Each structure stands twice: as C-alpha cells, then as structure tokens.
Image (cartoon, rainbow, N blue to C red; front, side):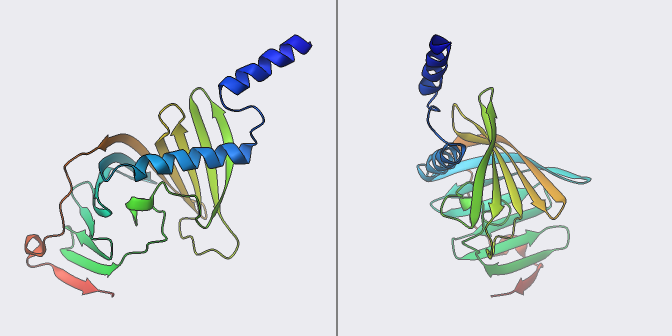
Length: 204
C-alpha cells in the first residue's frame, strides 16, 4: 500500500501537481496563458462564436496593443489602445467610444481577453484531464466585471486557450478558439475613408 502511495505521488510530481492546491494550479494556468500572449507583440486569433441561434466565424489581430476584430462580414472593431471604432457594415454606422481597459471580454477588449490575473475575477479549477484544464472565473463582490461568469478551457501542453464561455445571467456566449498565429501580419488600422457615407456616432 505504501509503495502504491509513493508511486502515485511520484506521478503527480512529474506532472507538477503534487502538493499543489486547485487554486494554485488554476492561478498557474491563468498566469502561463497570459504570459504566452504577453510575449507576442503581433499575433492573430481566429475563433467561432455561438450565441443562441447566432453563429459566425470571427477573429482579431493585435499589434503592439492595437487591434482589429471582425465578426463575419458584418462587423469590425478597431482600436489604437485609447479609442474604439465599432463598424456595423449592415447599418452603415461607426460607433466611437473610449477603450474599456479593465474589460476581459474578447469582443470588447481582445488584447486582455486571456489576462485574468490581478483582475476583478476569482478563479477555481473545475477539472483537469486528458491534457486539458477548465478554469471558472467569477466576478468578485462589488466588481465592475461586465462579462458575468467566464469559463476558460486550456490545452495544458501548450497553455493555449481552447474555448471561452460567457454567462450573462443565463444568456450564454460560447467561443471556440480555432487558431493562434504568432507574428501574423494581418493587423490594419481604422480607415475613415473606407467608411465614407456611414453615420458616425461619438460617445467620447
């Protein structure tokens, strides 16, 4: 019996899990995911989003803190780190607002979509198996986190995100991460000329 316990502990040590609490492991996972994005000054993320009957491909490109996000052919969002330009091609509208730097919502502030440490979220490790782990993030009491509860699933070999789920009081948005491409050269800035004839709505 003692030999079995020793062998089991050795296996956990090799996996980096012996004497590590679930909270510590969740924090380690979140930290390594965030570090992976911080080391890339330029990258592209492609995903699929599903919310009720709505489903579309999307993605975003980041360059030194600036980004361009798209959802299908209908919408684009551009940011220079300070100002956010939300372009609705169906309605012919451009909505201008200040960037919400504290947001961790991938559709609102993708630059910090996977940077949850030192945020307004408490985190717990839901499960870890078969090379994957799931961390649940819950807004702390009195926080201004607008995404509700967030569930993040990670590939523990690469420490890259596989999926995100946002729960807004029962309304769920699921995002499957299809690819993360370092140094991808697909970023472009907002071009006012490309929106000639659109209505501009400025909330700054």
